[in-house]
Length: 240
Image 1: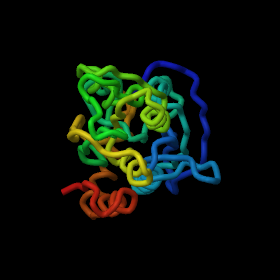
Image 2: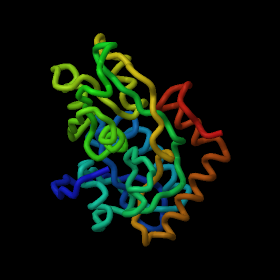
Image 3: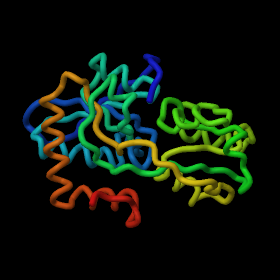
Image 4: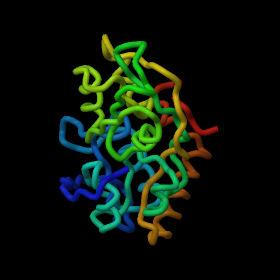
């Protein structure tokens, strides 16, 4: 999802209950309900709760690090942290640079948002977050794409008339639409990836296997689906 800009602010916070290998979990902290920074300045959200549980099951001693989205992959590769849990979609482009666990969220749709039902999604201006699978998709359409560092700026561009519509992960944009008096869903939903997984360096096979085992356990005992529903609602897509 990113450009190699090394202006990241790293904020480590304690997490995990394991007594084994120390693992630094990287996230953005700006993409609710997946991840965000709470009133105490700590990483919170679905991925914080899931990551802590994965670390507990895998007997890993985990800490959390906040990193800007634009440099989250380069800073993983360079060793600033050991994993990425930041709503990162699994796709072929990213797999050329990093490795992934199996998905912990199944493939989910992306949605267009606008303030006008007649928004031109093909020939108009569509706002996206930089470096996302949504940006890659819009880049291949006739629309004019404008990119922003975070999802809040995408919605600001729609409201100030800079963009005809925005395009993003449905579960991220849905609360903005539901809580607003002006935003609406337009057009058809699009499926773009293989789901969301933990990103790791390609050489970290042992760590990937440990996390994969923990994810499998949570899928099999139903606790992962419970956690998904807790953070995304009863109608969220879950693992079958």
